[in-house]
Image (cartoon, rainbow, N blue to C red; front, side, top):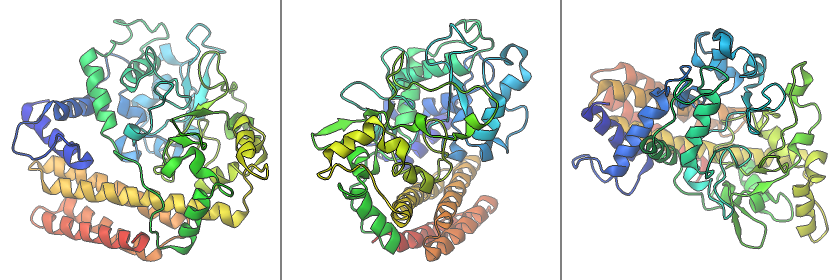
Length: 450
């Protein structure tokens, strides 16, 4: 990128994530800002000499850095996501276009490339938000759905190397220098810095002073060690666990998701091998994902087995979980030897809580995007930031409406969305509309939390 573009992007990212080294627009960007800006450019634009895909192909910013069937359906047929459909060398054993389009599943060769026809798993695309709070573990970094998504040292820095080899290749030979080029050390540093800058930089501190009757009850059940027990594995609705013996960091558990009956992908005629999880061969465990960003980034679990946040909560009341090693562990910790037993209203209440904390995060992001748009001189960059704010606001509205929650907040969010959209299209009154949109976002937030 040209120096002006680099500075602009670095400034905007600093405004979004509030990193300590980003204090004002006047000094030259520091090293971290430069890395974040370069990482952003690499993430969304660099193909590494491969088949045309970028990191942003599967982790688009406009869709919460993940993909799902609804988003996939909006893409043109020549989008790089669909290379298996128009590059002959990738037609077989690279992706399963049918499962990708219907269920948002991506083919992964986690056990190596020696037997492409038989050794693979089908997984959803995890979002990359809040990584700073969710990848650390005493046992080493936890990346990807099973915690071993990166080659080499398993770190987030190395994650891009595995992604390029798996997803960017021109042929199934996967020869570096021929089918793709591997990221350099400097590029890996930049990609890591950018990914760590995305989303929340710290965990929530629960309980929050929520206003809604049902979400408030859901939070209480979530935190109750004898009822919901959710906070044992998702401390503060994040990705760290504490089973009463101190923090486990981001931990791996066998929760029985692979034992769910009627998994959508397996109802088809397509081959979907059992996913054995962590390591090779796998031990059947998967790492803990953060929950703050969950409600608007489904489908849920590593295999996209469940579509709704209510269904995801209900899974833990079911037989597959309670008979799993993780379920039995929770039962052992319970004075009465019980696993998780929830009634329908309690499931809905927990889901309502998760919906609300997701929207609170969306509102935080929306306000930061709107404020950042006021600080840039480039009209194109301003329009991009405002458009992102519109997407975040649409997510907020959809998540609340999906749970029948906070109609007053929804009305203010709709007003904020209209104002942000006007700001995108207005040359003379863009600042005025943006400032009004910020006020509407804050009014919406006031209905959710004190």
